[in-house]
Image (cartoon, rainbow, N blue to C red):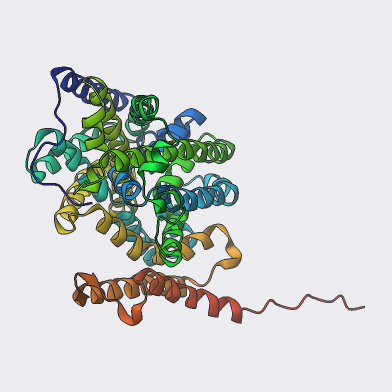
Length: 481
Protein backbone atom coordinates (compact mmCIF):
# COMPACT_ATOMS: atom_id res chain seq x y z
CA UNK A 1 0.00 0.00 0.00
CA UNK A 2 1.41 3.33 -1.10
CA UNK A 3 0.54 6.80 0.11
CA UNK A 4 -2.61 7.98 -1.64
CA UNK A 5 -3.03 11.19 -3.59
CA UNK A 6 -3.75 14.32 -1.59
CA UNK A 7 -7.53 13.93 -1.54
CA UNK A 8 -9.94 13.35 1.31
CA UNK A 9 -11.71 9.98 1.08
CA UNK A 10 -13.75 10.30 4.27
CA UNK A 11 -16.12 13.22 4.66
CA UNK A 12 -16.47 14.12 8.32
CA UNK A 13 -19.26 15.95 10.09
CA UNK A 14 -18.63 18.25 13.03
CA UNK A 15 -19.41 15.44 15.48
CA UNK A 16 -16.88 13.16 13.75
CA UNK A 17 -14.16 15.79 14.13
CA UNK A 18 -15.08 16.23 17.80
CA UNK A 19 -14.72 12.48 18.36
CA UNK A 20 -11.27 12.49 16.75
CA UNK A 21 -10.21 15.54 18.77
CA UNK A 22 -11.42 13.90 21.99
CA UNK A 23 -9.45 10.75 21.18
CA UNK A 24 -6.23 12.63 20.49
CA UNK A 25 -6.66 14.80 23.58
CA UNK A 26 -7.29 11.83 25.87
CA UNK A 27 -4.39 9.93 24.29
CA UNK A 28 -1.98 12.76 25.04
CA UNK A 29 -3.38 13.09 28.55
CA UNK A 30 -2.72 9.40 29.24
CA UNK A 31 0.75 9.62 27.75
CA UNK A 32 1.83 12.67 29.72
CA UNK A 33 0.13 11.39 32.87
CA UNK A 34 2.41 8.37 32.63
CA UNK A 35 5.40 10.71 32.61
CA UNK A 36 4.64 11.99 36.10
CA UNK A 37 5.01 8.56 37.69
CA UNK A 38 7.43 6.75 35.43
CA UNK A 39 10.68 8.69 35.67
CA UNK A 40 12.08 7.59 39.02
CA UNK A 41 14.67 5.17 37.63
CA UNK A 42 15.79 3.67 34.34
CA UNK A 43 13.91 0.47 35.20
CA UNK A 44 10.74 2.48 35.81
CA UNK A 45 11.11 4.48 32.59
CA UNK A 46 12.14 1.52 30.42
CA UNK A 47 10.25 -1.42 31.96
CA UNK A 48 7.58 0.10 34.18
CA UNK A 49 9.22 -1.57 37.18
CA UNK A 50 8.44 -5.03 35.68
CA UNK A 51 4.92 -4.77 37.10
CA UNK A 52 2.91 -5.38 33.92
CA UNK A 53 -0.24 -7.27 34.92
CA UNK A 54 -2.12 -9.77 32.76
CA UNK A 55 -4.74 -7.28 31.43
CA UNK A 56 -2.07 -4.68 30.67
CA UNK A 57 0.16 -7.30 29.04
CA UNK A 58 -2.61 -8.56 26.76
CA UNK A 59 -3.81 -5.09 25.77
CA UNK A 60 -0.28 -3.86 25.06
CA UNK A 61 0.86 -6.91 23.10
CA UNK A 62 -2.36 -7.29 21.09
CA UNK A 63 -2.45 -3.60 20.16
CA UNK A 64 1.27 -3.20 19.49
CA UNK A 65 1.69 -6.36 17.40
CA UNK A 66 -1.31 -5.59 15.16
CA UNK A 67 -0.68 -2.37 13.27
CA UNK A 68 -0.99 -3.02 9.55
CA UNK A 69 -4.69 -2.35 9.31
CA UNK A 70 -4.75 -0.80 5.83
CA UNK A 71 -2.54 -3.60 4.48
CA UNK A 72 -4.95 -6.12 5.99
CA UNK A 73 -7.83 -4.33 4.29
CA UNK A 74 -6.02 -4.42 0.96
CA UNK A 75 -5.18 -8.12 1.20
CA UNK A 76 -8.63 -9.22 2.37
CA UNK A 77 -10.23 -7.12 -0.40
CA UNK A 78 -8.06 -8.78 -3.03
CA UNK A 79 -7.83 -12.35 -1.70
CA UNK A 80 -10.66 -12.86 0.80
CA UNK A 81 -10.24 -15.27 3.70
CA UNK A 82 -6.66 -15.95 2.62
CA UNK A 83 -5.98 -12.84 4.71
CA UNK A 84 -6.64 -14.93 7.83
CA UNK A 85 -4.58 -17.87 6.56
CA UNK A 86 -1.58 -15.72 5.56
CA UNK A 87 -1.53 -12.94 8.18
CA UNK A 88 -3.20 -14.77 11.04
CA UNK A 89 -2.69 -18.52 11.23
CA UNK A 90 1.14 -18.71 10.93
CA UNK A 91 1.54 -15.94 13.49
CA UNK A 92 -0.72 -17.81 15.93
CA UNK A 93 1.54 -20.86 15.56
CA UNK A 94 4.76 -18.99 16.29
CA UNK A 95 3.14 -16.98 19.08
CA UNK A 96 2.21 -20.29 20.73
CA UNK A 97 5.78 -21.50 20.21
CA UNK A 98 7.06 -18.35 21.91
CA UNK A 99 4.62 -18.72 24.81
CA UNK A 100 5.44 -22.37 25.45
CA UNK A 101 9.17 -22.49 24.74
CA UNK A 102 10.55 -18.96 25.18
CA UNK A 103 8.41 -16.83 27.52
CA UNK A 104 9.73 -18.29 30.79
CA UNK A 105 13.33 -18.31 29.58
CA UNK A 106 13.07 -14.68 28.41
CA UNK A 107 11.46 -13.41 31.63
CA UNK A 108 13.86 -15.33 33.86
CA UNK A 109 16.84 -13.46 32.40
CA UNK A 110 15.77 -10.30 34.22
CA UNK A 111 17.36 -8.25 31.44
CA UNK A 112 16.15 -5.16 29.61
CA UNK A 113 16.12 -6.08 25.92
CA UNK A 114 17.12 -8.45 23.13
CA UNK A 115 20.54 -6.74 22.76
CA UNK A 116 21.09 -7.24 26.51
CA UNK A 117 20.70 -10.97 25.96
CA UNK A 118 23.11 -10.92 23.01
CA UNK A 119 25.73 -8.97 24.99
CA UNK A 120 25.43 -11.35 27.92
CA UNK A 121 25.68 -14.51 25.80
CA UNK A 122 28.29 -13.43 23.26
CA UNK A 123 31.02 -10.78 23.02
CA UNK A 124 30.72 -7.01 22.63
CA UNK A 125 31.03 -6.93 18.85
CA UNK A 126 28.23 -9.47 18.46
CA UNK A 127 26.12 -7.51 20.92
CA UNK A 128 26.73 -4.29 19.01
CA UNK A 129 25.89 -5.85 15.64
CA UNK A 130 22.79 -7.41 17.16
CA UNK A 131 21.77 -4.04 18.63
CA UNK A 132 22.01 -2.38 15.23
CA UNK A 133 19.95 -5.16 13.64
CA UNK A 134 17.35 -5.01 16.41
CA UNK A 135 17.07 -1.24 15.99
CA UNK A 136 16.12 -1.60 12.34
CA UNK A 137 13.96 -4.66 13.04
CA UNK A 138 12.03 -2.46 15.50
CA UNK A 139 11.52 0.30 12.97
CA UNK A 140 8.06 1.89 13.16
CA UNK A 141 8.47 3.21 9.58
CA UNK A 142 5.67 1.09 8.00
CA UNK A 143 3.23 2.29 10.66
CA UNK A 144 4.39 5.89 10.49
CA UNK A 145 3.48 5.75 6.78
CA UNK A 146 0.13 4.11 7.50
CA UNK A 147 -0.62 6.73 10.13
CA UNK A 148 0.16 9.47 7.61
CA UNK A 149 -2.18 7.90 5.07
CA UNK A 150 -4.97 7.74 7.65
CA UNK A 151 -4.49 11.42 8.44
CA UNK A 152 -4.51 12.20 4.74
CA UNK A 153 -7.79 10.40 3.98
CA UNK A 154 -9.70 12.81 6.22
CA UNK A 155 -7.73 16.01 5.67
CA UNK A 156 -6.56 15.83 2.07
CA UNK A 157 -3.24 17.37 3.16
CA UNK A 158 0.01 16.47 1.36
CA UNK A 159 1.45 13.16 2.55
CA UNK A 160 4.66 14.77 3.79
CA UNK A 161 2.75 17.07 6.14
CA UNK A 162 0.63 14.17 7.42
CA UNK A 163 3.81 12.15 7.90
CA UNK A 164 5.38 14.76 10.15
CA UNK A 165 2.18 15.40 12.11
CA UNK A 166 1.49 11.73 12.80
CA UNK A 167 5.09 10.90 13.73
CA UNK A 168 5.44 13.88 16.07
CA UNK A 169 2.18 13.08 17.91
CA UNK A 170 3.38 9.59 18.85
CA UNK A 171 6.87 10.85 19.63
CA UNK A 172 5.66 13.40 22.19
CA UNK A 173 4.10 11.08 24.77
CA UNK A 174 6.64 8.29 24.27
CA UNK A 175 9.43 10.82 24.90
CA UNK A 176 7.73 12.09 28.05
CA UNK A 177 6.34 8.91 29.60
CA UNK A 178 8.45 5.98 28.44
CA UNK A 179 7.11 2.45 28.83
CA UNK A 180 4.20 3.32 31.12
CA UNK A 181 2.95 5.89 28.63
CA UNK A 182 2.98 3.17 25.95
CA UNK A 183 0.99 0.75 28.12
CA UNK A 184 -1.53 3.36 29.32
CA UNK A 185 -2.28 4.49 25.77
CA UNK A 186 -2.40 0.88 24.54
CA UNK A 187 -5.23 0.11 26.98
CA UNK A 188 -7.31 2.82 25.29
CA UNK A 189 -6.25 1.82 21.80
CA UNK A 190 -6.99 -1.87 22.44
CA UNK A 191 -10.60 -1.01 23.28
CA UNK A 192 -10.98 1.30 20.30
CA UNK A 193 -9.53 -1.04 17.68
CA UNK A 194 -12.02 -3.76 18.60
CA UNK A 195 -14.88 -1.31 19.13
CA UNK A 196 -14.40 0.33 15.74
CA UNK A 197 -14.64 -2.89 13.72
CA UNK A 198 -17.43 -4.36 15.83
CA UNK A 199 -19.37 -1.14 15.19
CA UNK A 200 -18.78 -1.42 11.43
CA UNK A 201 -20.02 -5.02 11.42
CA UNK A 202 -23.02 -4.00 13.53
CA UNK A 203 -24.17 -1.91 10.57
CA UNK A 204 -23.20 -4.46 7.88
CA UNK A 205 -24.38 -7.82 9.21
CA UNK A 206 -28.03 -6.88 10.03
CA UNK A 207 -28.35 -5.06 6.70
CA UNK A 208 -26.85 -7.67 4.39
CA UNK A 209 -26.39 -10.86 6.38
CA UNK A 210 -23.39 -13.13 5.86
CA UNK A 211 -24.74 -16.07 3.86
CA UNK A 212 -25.85 -16.11 1.08
CA UNK A 213 -24.97 -12.45 0.46
CA UNK A 214 -21.18 -12.81 0.60
CA UNK A 215 -21.00 -16.19 -1.12
CA UNK A 216 -23.12 -14.83 -4.00
CA UNK A 217 -21.31 -11.49 -4.31
CA UNK A 218 -17.67 -12.62 -4.02
CA UNK A 219 -15.38 -14.39 -6.49
CA UNK A 220 -15.09 -18.08 -5.65
CA UNK A 221 -11.38 -17.80 -4.78
CA UNK A 222 -12.18 -15.29 -2.04
CA UNK A 223 -13.71 -18.11 0.00
CA UNK A 224 -10.68 -20.42 -0.26
CA UNK A 225 -7.68 -20.51 2.07
CA UNK A 226 -5.22 -19.51 -0.65
CA UNK A 227 -7.33 -16.81 -2.32
CA UNK A 228 -6.19 -18.11 -5.70
CA UNK A 229 -2.49 -17.75 -4.82
CA UNK A 230 0.01 -20.58 -5.24
CA UNK A 231 1.01 -22.65 -2.24
CA UNK A 232 4.61 -21.54 -2.84
CA UNK A 233 3.48 -17.96 -2.27
CA UNK A 234 1.64 -18.97 0.90
CA UNK A 235 4.68 -20.80 2.27
CA UNK A 236 6.79 -17.64 1.90
CA UNK A 237 4.49 -15.86 4.35
CA UNK A 238 4.83 -18.74 6.82
CA UNK A 239 8.60 -18.16 6.77
CA UNK A 240 8.07 -14.43 7.27
CA UNK A 241 5.99 -15.30 10.35
CA UNK A 242 9.26 -16.46 11.95
CA UNK A 243 9.50 -12.73 12.70
CA UNK A 244 7.48 -13.56 15.83
CA UNK A 245 10.43 -15.35 17.46
CA UNK A 246 12.70 -12.30 17.09
CA UNK A 247 9.90 -9.80 17.64
CA UNK A 248 11.02 -6.89 19.84
CA UNK A 249 7.43 -6.53 21.10
CA UNK A 250 7.20 -10.12 22.34
CA UNK A 251 10.54 -9.92 24.11
CA UNK A 252 10.02 -6.45 25.56
CA UNK A 253 6.59 -7.06 27.03
CA UNK A 254 7.70 -10.45 28.36
CA UNK A 255 10.61 -8.78 30.16
CA UNK A 256 8.17 -6.25 31.66
CA UNK A 257 5.64 -8.82 32.88
CA UNK A 258 5.13 -9.44 36.61
CA UNK A 259 6.14 -13.06 36.23
CA UNK A 260 6.91 -15.73 33.61
CA UNK A 261 3.41 -17.09 34.16
CA UNK A 262 1.90 -13.69 33.36
CA UNK A 263 3.90 -13.54 30.14
CA UNK A 264 3.01 -17.06 29.03
CA UNK A 265 -0.70 -16.74 29.81
CA UNK A 266 -0.75 -13.25 28.32
CA UNK A 267 0.54 -14.50 24.98
CA UNK A 268 -1.94 -17.38 24.96
CA UNK A 269 -4.82 -14.97 25.59
CA UNK A 270 -3.44 -12.58 22.98
CA UNK A 271 -3.73 -15.31 20.34
CA UNK A 272 -7.45 -15.57 21.14
CA UNK A 273 -7.90 -11.81 20.76
CA UNK A 274 -5.91 -11.77 17.50
CA UNK A 275 -8.14 -14.52 16.14
CA UNK A 276 -11.26 -12.50 17.01
CA UNK A 277 -9.85 -9.31 15.51
CA UNK A 278 -8.63 -11.09 12.37
CA UNK A 279 -12.12 -12.51 11.94
CA UNK A 280 -13.66 -9.03 12.21
CA UNK A 281 -11.17 -7.39 9.82
CA UNK A 282 -11.34 -10.20 7.26
CA UNK A 283 -15.14 -10.17 7.30
CA UNK A 284 -15.06 -6.38 6.85
CA UNK A 285 -12.74 -6.81 3.87
CA UNK A 286 -15.17 -9.30 2.31
CA UNK A 287 -18.01 -6.79 2.67
CA UNK A 288 -15.83 -4.11 1.07
CA UNK A 289 -15.21 -6.34 -1.97
CA UNK A 290 -18.89 -7.27 -2.21
CA UNK A 291 -20.19 -3.69 -1.92
CA UNK A 292 -17.34 -1.86 -3.70
CA UNK A 293 -16.17 -4.33 -6.36
CA UNK A 294 -14.29 -1.84 -8.57
CA UNK A 295 -11.96 -0.07 -6.15
CA UNK A 296 -8.88 1.43 -7.78
CA UNK A 297 -7.16 1.64 -4.37
CA UNK A 298 -7.72 -1.63 -2.47
CA UNK A 299 -5.62 -0.24 0.39
CA UNK A 300 -8.45 2.20 1.02
CA UNK A 301 -11.06 -0.56 1.33
CA UNK A 302 -11.90 0.12 4.98
CA UNK A 303 -12.14 3.94 4.79
CA UNK A 304 -14.25 3.79 1.63
CA UNK A 305 -16.51 1.11 3.09
CA UNK A 306 -17.02 3.28 6.19
CA UNK A 307 -17.84 6.26 3.99
CA UNK A 308 -20.56 4.28 2.25
CA UNK A 309 -22.29 2.52 5.16
CA UNK A 310 -21.68 4.52 8.35
CA UNK A 311 -23.57 7.61 9.50
CA UNK A 312 -22.06 10.58 11.32
CA UNK A 313 -20.56 9.76 14.73
CA UNK A 314 -20.28 6.06 13.85
CA UNK A 315 -17.88 7.05 11.09
CA UNK A 316 -15.75 9.00 13.53
CA UNK A 317 -15.67 6.11 16.00
CA UNK A 318 -14.62 3.64 13.30
CA UNK A 319 -11.94 6.04 12.11
CA UNK A 320 -10.37 6.38 15.55
CA UNK A 321 -10.50 2.58 15.77
CA UNK A 322 -8.28 2.39 12.68
CA UNK A 323 -6.15 5.22 14.02
CA UNK A 324 -5.72 3.46 17.37
CA UNK A 325 -4.69 0.22 15.65
CA UNK A 326 -1.85 1.97 13.84
CA UNK A 327 -0.80 4.37 16.62
CA UNK A 328 -0.47 1.59 19.20
CA UNK A 329 2.11 -0.14 17.02
CA UNK A 330 3.85 3.11 16.10
CA UNK A 331 4.42 4.21 19.69
CA UNK A 332 5.39 0.72 20.92
CA UNK A 333 8.01 0.20 18.24
CA UNK A 334 9.28 3.77 18.58
CA UNK A 335 9.92 3.13 22.26
CA UNK A 336 11.65 -0.23 21.71
CA UNK A 337 13.88 1.16 18.96
CA UNK A 338 14.70 4.17 21.13
CA UNK A 339 15.65 1.91 24.05
CA UNK A 340 17.92 -0.06 21.71
CA UNK A 341 19.81 2.92 20.35
CA UNK A 342 19.82 4.90 23.61
CA UNK A 343 20.67 2.23 26.19
CA UNK A 344 22.12 -0.70 24.25
CA UNK A 345 24.35 1.30 21.91
CA UNK A 346 25.01 4.85 23.14
CA UNK A 347 24.93 4.35 26.92
CA UNK A 348 26.69 0.99 26.88
CA UNK A 349 29.48 2.05 24.53
CA UNK A 350 29.75 5.52 26.02
CA UNK A 351 30.26 4.08 29.49
CA UNK A 352 27.41 6.08 31.08
CA UNK A 353 24.99 3.54 32.53
CA UNK A 354 23.54 5.51 35.43
CA UNK A 355 19.75 5.87 35.52
CA UNK A 356 19.72 9.51 34.50
CA UNK A 357 21.99 8.99 31.49
CA UNK A 358 20.15 5.89 30.28
CA UNK A 359 16.77 7.64 30.49
CA UNK A 360 18.13 10.70 28.73
CA UNK A 361 19.78 8.69 25.95
CA UNK A 362 16.56 6.74 25.44
CA UNK A 363 14.61 9.98 25.08
CA UNK A 364 17.12 11.17 22.49
CA UNK A 365 16.65 7.75 20.88
CA UNK A 366 12.93 8.49 20.54
CA UNK A 367 13.73 11.58 18.46
CA UNK A 368 16.38 9.72 16.45
CA UNK A 369 14.05 6.77 15.75
CA UNK A 370 11.29 9.10 14.58
CA UNK A 371 13.68 10.88 12.22
CA UNK A 372 15.04 7.61 10.78
CA UNK A 373 11.49 6.28 10.31
CA UNK A 374 10.41 9.37 8.41
CA UNK A 375 13.53 9.02 6.24
CA UNK A 376 12.71 5.35 5.61
CA UNK A 377 9.20 6.26 4.50
CA UNK A 378 10.54 8.84 2.08
CA UNK A 379 12.94 6.21 0.67
CA UNK A 380 10.39 3.38 0.50
CA UNK A 381 6.92 5.02 0.36
CA UNK A 382 5.09 1.69 0.48
CA UNK A 383 4.03 -0.26 3.55
CA UNK A 384 4.48 -3.59 1.76
CA UNK A 385 7.99 -2.60 0.62
CA UNK A 386 8.92 -1.56 4.16
CA UNK A 387 7.61 -4.83 5.63
CA UNK A 388 9.47 -6.80 2.99
CA UNK A 389 12.75 -4.95 3.48
CA UNK A 390 12.71 -5.28 7.28
CA UNK A 391 11.74 -8.96 7.27
CA UNK A 392 14.12 -9.90 4.48
CA UNK A 393 17.24 -8.24 5.87
CA UNK A 394 17.00 -8.72 9.62
CA UNK A 395 15.21 -12.01 10.37
CA UNK A 396 17.94 -14.22 8.80
CA UNK A 397 20.65 -12.45 10.80
CA UNK A 398 18.90 -12.54 14.19
CA UNK A 399 16.89 -15.77 14.29
CA UNK A 400 19.43 -18.47 15.12
CA UNK A 401 21.81 -16.36 17.23
CA UNK A 402 18.91 -15.22 19.42
CA UNK A 403 17.28 -18.65 19.73
CA UNK A 404 20.66 -20.10 20.76
CA UNK A 405 20.91 -17.68 23.70
CA UNK A 406 17.92 -19.43 25.29
CA UNK A 407 18.95 -22.96 24.24
CA UNK A 408 22.68 -23.21 24.99
CA UNK A 409 23.07 -26.58 23.21
CA UNK A 410 22.59 -24.68 19.95
CA UNK A 411 25.21 -22.07 20.81
CA UNK A 412 28.34 -21.86 18.68
CA UNK A 413 31.46 -19.80 19.32
CA UNK A 414 31.30 -16.02 19.58
CA UNK A 415 33.34 -15.59 16.40
CA UNK A 416 31.17 -17.96 14.38
CA UNK A 417 28.01 -16.38 15.78
CA UNK A 418 29.22 -12.95 14.69
CA UNK A 419 30.09 -14.29 11.22
CA UNK A 420 26.73 -16.07 10.93
CA UNK A 421 24.90 -12.90 11.91
CA UNK A 422 26.96 -10.70 9.60
CA UNK A 423 26.84 -13.24 6.75
CA UNK A 424 23.07 -13.74 7.02
CA UNK A 425 22.51 -10.00 6.83
CA UNK A 426 25.10 -9.36 4.11
CA UNK A 427 23.88 -12.11 1.78
CA UNK A 428 20.25 -11.00 2.17
CA UNK A 429 21.23 -7.37 1.57
CA UNK A 430 23.38 -8.11 -1.49
CA UNK A 431 20.72 -10.38 -2.99
CA UNK A 432 18.02 -7.79 -2.29
CA UNK A 433 20.05 -4.98 -3.86
CA UNK A 434 20.97 -7.08 -6.91
CA UNK A 435 17.31 -7.95 -7.47
CA UNK A 436 16.21 -4.33 -7.21
CA UNK A 437 18.89 -3.29 -9.73
CA UNK A 438 17.84 -6.00 -12.21
CA UNK A 439 14.08 -5.75 -12.65
CA UNK A 440 11.83 -7.06 -15.42
CA UNK A 441 8.58 -5.14 -15.83
CA UNK A 442 9.13 -3.67 -12.38
CA UNK A 443 9.57 -7.07 -10.70
CA UNK A 444 12.95 -7.72 -9.01
CA UNK A 445 14.98 -10.60 -10.42
CA UNK A 446 16.99 -12.08 -7.57
CA UNK A 447 20.17 -14.15 -8.12
CA UNK A 448 19.33 -17.76 -9.06
CA UNK A 449 15.66 -16.92 -8.50
CA UNK A 450 16.05 -17.28 -4.71
CA UNK A 451 14.30 -14.90 -2.35
CA UNK A 452 16.87 -12.85 -0.38
CA UNK A 453 15.43 -14.02 2.94
CA UNK A 454 16.03 -17.67 2.00
CA UNK A 455 19.58 -16.92 0.93
CA UNK A 456 20.34 -15.20 4.23
CA UNK A 457 18.77 -18.00 6.28
CA UNK A 458 20.76 -20.57 4.31
CA UNK A 459 24.04 -18.83 5.18
CA UNK A 460 23.15 -18.65 8.86
CA UNK A 461 22.06 -22.32 8.85
CA UNK A 462 25.33 -23.26 7.17
CA UNK A 463 27.37 -21.80 10.02
CA UNK A 464 25.23 -23.44 12.68
CA UNK A 465 24.68 -26.74 10.90
CA UNK A 466 28.32 -27.45 10.05
CA UNK A 467 29.49 -26.45 13.54
CA UNK A 468 26.91 -28.50 15.39
CA UNK A 469 27.40 -31.56 13.18
CA UNK A 470 31.15 -31.48 13.79
CA UNK A 471 30.69 -31.10 17.53
CA UNK A 472 31.32 -34.51 19.06
CA UNK A 473 30.35 -34.98 22.68
CA UNK A 474 33.10 -36.21 24.92
CA UNK A 475 32.80 -39.93 25.80
CA UNK A 476 31.50 -40.62 29.29
CA UNK A 477 34.12 -41.18 31.94
CA UNK A 478 34.55 -44.71 33.16
CA UNK A 479 35.24 -45.63 36.74
CA UNK A 480 38.40 -47.68 36.99
CA UNK A 481 38.85 -50.13 39.81
